[in-house]
Image (tube, rainbow, N blue to C red; front, top):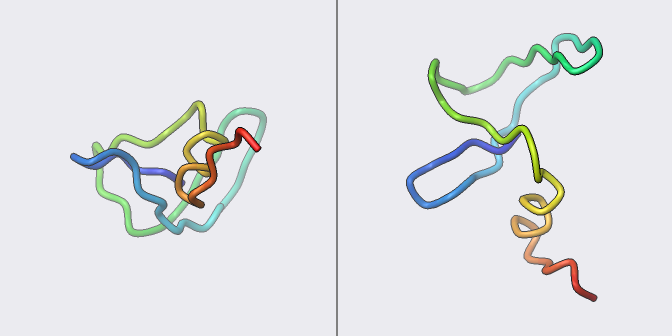
Length: 55
């Protein structure tokens, strides 16, 4: 999961408890009120891995 910080987004390890349709329950080192990415996750992952995606 990607969590918003003051400098952008960081990858945060979570465990999926359950999922149904577009709803997912996770557990991990998260705080109430933290903002998480719900879109453009592919672009965030590419940036996190250091890839531009423009081979």
